[in-house]
Image 1: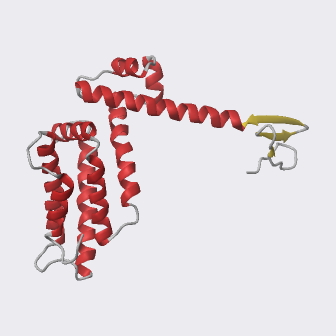
Image 2: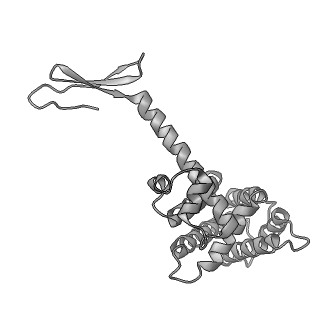
Image 3: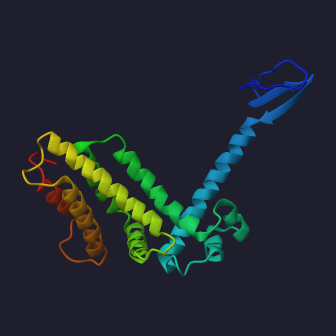
Length: 230
């Protein structure tokens, strides 16, 4: 980083390793930035954002998104309402952040995977979902409500399904090129049917329908399209 002091030669910041501060010398004086303090404040703010999301999630699960209020979320988080709104400007922003936090985990699992490894990544996500019943229930309810185009979460749900089907189609197309897809299987239809099967199976699982094993049932369904072991 270079700084230009008006009427003086360019100067560079210097790091004081003892105090963990950055000194910027300008015209014989110095501006001192306490980087340790900045990092500390950032960590504190990030921690509070996570606490707000955790509180929002608990309230959404308990009363639903529609009935939830920012004031209730603030009480749950042990913060003032303005304090909560400092981190997220609306309950919609909080809901989207709750879902996006889950998406980050999924992206970490799927990142860089292709063909059969992508499908194995989907299996791993389903395996982890077994321990996230409240999150799956919240998502399922919101996804159903968001079928109306004017619902505030409709764009997110639509784009998420579009991404899942698109990436799954690519994985099945890769498998077809490798000769690992059964004859007559259409990659796009296999992706659509797999997505539909998983979404429907989750609904049955949430309603405690006997005999549901999400991981094994998903494995067996995807396996029916393949000529190699998943």
